[in-house]
Image (cartoon, rainbow, N blue to C red):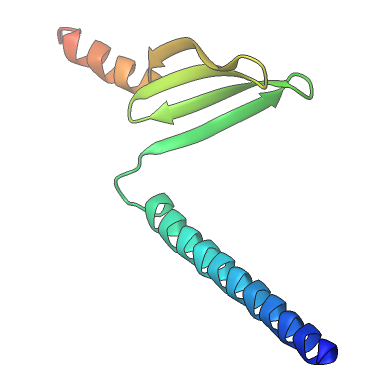
Length: 103
């Protein structure tokens, strides 16, 4: 009788573990599917142009979004901070060319 109950408990434990692993697999599959869908969106025009690691905890990033450039500081302690933002040089040149009168 004792051997029978031990077998039932073992089968229940294995079945419970299989169920948890199946739920985890479904969760991972769903996260990968939705994450890839959002990253490949054609409406996203944000790019990381450069990254400079200062040390193991701090780095600087140059990010472009449309005509705008941002210099960001990242840190494990302070998070992300905007240091500078400016318009793209190409946009400035085209605006200057439009304002310059022709001779």
